[in-house]
Structure formats: C-alpha cells, structure tokens
Image 1 (cartoon, rainbow over the protein chains, first blue to last red):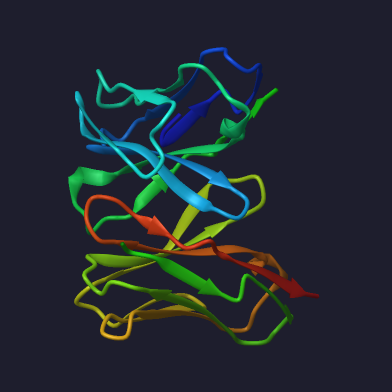
Image 2: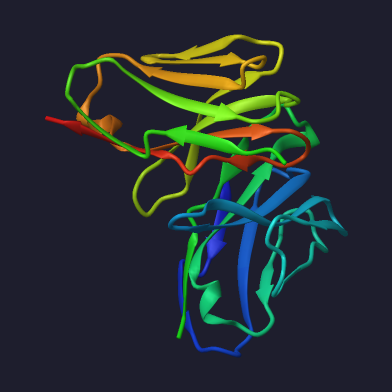
Length: 114
Length: 110
C-alpha cells in the first residue's frame, strides 16, 4: 500500500517487556518522526530522523530507542515498557527534507502497558 | 522555547455558521505554520500550510491566516457542516521539527 503505515495498530504489553512499533513509508521521504499523543499534553516529539543512519532526540526521548537502517523504515523500541508509556504513537514523514513541506501521518498505534 | 496555544479547547456551533479557530505562538522565528485535522481514532491530515513569507492560504471553505509579528493564526471555516466535526491542531516549524498546539475540539450541531 502506498503511503505511511504503522504496525501493530493495537498492542497490550506488560511492564518491563520490550516492545517495537513499526513504521513504513513508500515515498522515500528523507525525514521521519515519532510522536506520542496523550490527553492534556497533545502531540510530543520522541525522536526524528533526517536520513538513513541519522537520528536525533525530540522532546521526550527517555525510555525509547530508534534506528533507521533503511530510508523507508523507522522502528521505535520501548526497551523496558512502563505504565507511563501507555499512549497513542504516531509516525510521520516529510518529503525531500524541505522544511517548507507538510508532514504525512500514519494511522497510529494504541499501546497499553499493564 | 516555542509554545503553541489554541483557544478554545472545545467549541460547539450550529450547522451553517461561520467560525474561527485561534492559534498563538511565542516565537515568530518560524518557517511555516500548518493546520491539521484529526478525527477520533485517526491520524492527522494536513489542511493548510502557510509559509513564513505568506499571509494566508485558502482551500475550499477553509481559510488560514498568519501574522508572524503578533504570533497569531486563525482558521476560518465557512458554512460549517456536521462533517467538519473533528479536532483541529495548529503547528509551527521553527526548524526541522514541528511543535503542536493541543488542539480545538470542534462539534458542529446538526
């Protein structure tokens, strides 16, 4: 499918487990982003990547790890999940690395940590 | 630190009315400002993007304005419809990243 996809769409896990959320885009966009969305906080940037093998921290990176070995994939790993990481996670991408272009968002992954 | 504020947090209006959503930001050094729409349980969809050198953008019944000097933007929706019910988010780009407001939850009453 063309566009930006996330998997899984829903995930329930337990405290202390490792969880990986997947993000895939078909446009060969340079930039990719991970956000979490929580009531009262809105959307907050976790990590972003300007190109393959280049990643940088956002506003709330603690407890998360990312990698970008291929342009089209940008997985987000929770190394040891905590209840505070229960959230909706959105992946996004932006075309050609230009700041002036819009971001395209995936449908989100709802994560519940018990 | 750039902060984006959207007031009100929620708004209900009768169908057919024109309405304005407000957004303010604290630092005028931005590349662009965007308005997004989010439906319940869905991702975000870009509605309008205004470059820093522009004053407004229009798409159908939507018109967004930007006043960098005052740190303000408005989203005008003409002849509102029940299908316009959603959360509208304002976001600014000071660099590679985007900073979002918390959104205005809009309900159009049939």
